[in-house]
Image 1 (cartoon, rainbow, N blue to C red):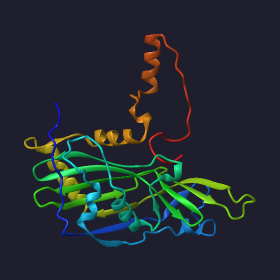
Image 2 (cartoon, helix red, strand yellow; image 1 turned 45 degrees about the horizontal axis):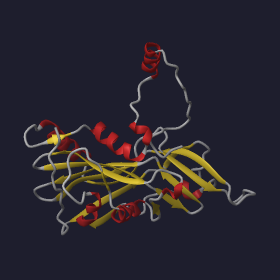
Image 3 (cartoon, rainbow, N blue to C red; image 1 turned 180 degrees about the vertical axis):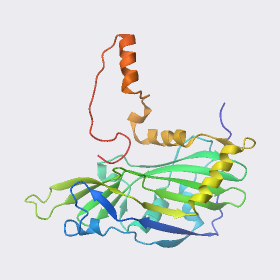
Image 4 (cartoon, one colour; image 1 turned 120 degrees about the vertical axis):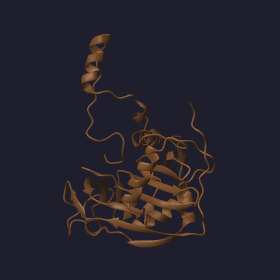
Length: 268
């Protein structure tokens, strides 16, 4: 049965305070985050720990028309870039042709009181002689529907063990076009307004109310977004054990491919 469509709106006259966080890089495989190796990476920090915005900036994350649960829409770029500049002054959304660009959101759940939007963004940050590429930014945007206010917003770098890639043009190299690539882990990189307690409380309400609400799970919402970036996410994957059972039952060979990186984010 199809879900009903709803219109999402915000009061543009309100101000929203957003806090920004970037924790020190914990490690890279080749220790390029250590001072004197690549100072810009070693000293990577948030551009503005706190900033005031008009609520209108968050319209970038709203659909242009009525929307139903689980149907993705594209996020507007300019508003997103303005928020990303709170983390670092040089964000880039086109991925320079080396990644899978995109900004997508979907409505995960709603009641008469709240709406929970889940989103995913791919971006890079220019660090002087190189680039910092997060695996992705994922997040929640919770709206108080009657008041048309921002109850909670979080755009964050997911946990590791490896959650970013860097490319560095080594000035000491004989070839100016030579790039050194590395991966690593950063424990926190996020923009947030509101607290995790607010998100948990609202999520509980959304999941417990059965009248006047509709929802999909967090996993279903994330899969809907992932499919906008990667064809591989549209495959109905099974475990190796299940694949072996199916191969034997159907008398079909297995074609095995070994890869050394994830299929569903921007870390090689």
